[in-house]
Length: 301
Ligand SMILES: [Zn+2]
Ligand SMILES: [Zn+2]
Image: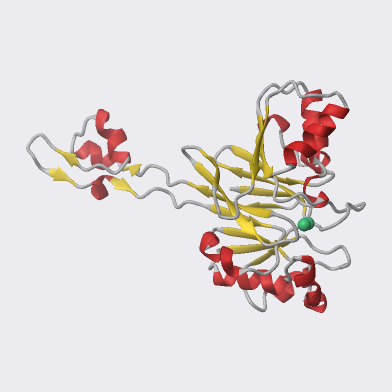
């Protein structure tokens, strides 16, 4: 699992910082999460192949999370994309994008599918045999969802020496990897545990931006490998959190601790702060394993 931060600052783009956008690589998927201004430039800078992006997840319709989307949709067309693009985001996103395509008379030649979200409960928005993606309802000034990306458990690993010792025919290998026991010709049952190792541990990633402090999401993100949680403010401005629908570094760390996550990545910093290391310092008073997102930074798990 690999996470590339394309942008992780709040509000406006600046010379050297971008609003929210990130790329999650999980089991051969390249998921784009949020698409603030500058996203397509950062995709190029980070050498992410445009054609491999098939799903874009948009948390909410504030500009710092989706104003880069029309540009990217348009660039895909100019690059003669022909594979479908799926956009998952709040109700209204279809209207916002298609109005611009209509007025600029630049309909995409590739299939463009919108999956509009209105549910206030968590729901599955994408699933295949290896990965499932769910919404994480957040509490912000407008309707907003985070997203939980989870690998599904793979097959058990066959212990080749063991299956050869018992002279088990290859046609049974698939069933054994799925967890089946084996009955030998003489009636002896060989338990699956003797023939296989457990599947590799699954990884998961929870993206939570933007949100005020809210513990309702904790059961959903319990024990995730990595949690990205917004931390717009330091303690010096924590009085702004409730009013603006944002969290402080300490609040993000408290969620991480209560959800028992493996590691916490902070982001969505207010651009009023010069030194983002202070976010780590404050968060670490509550939770140890804290990383600081920054544009261009890559995290691998
Ligand atoms: Zn934001
Ligand atoms: Zn917002």
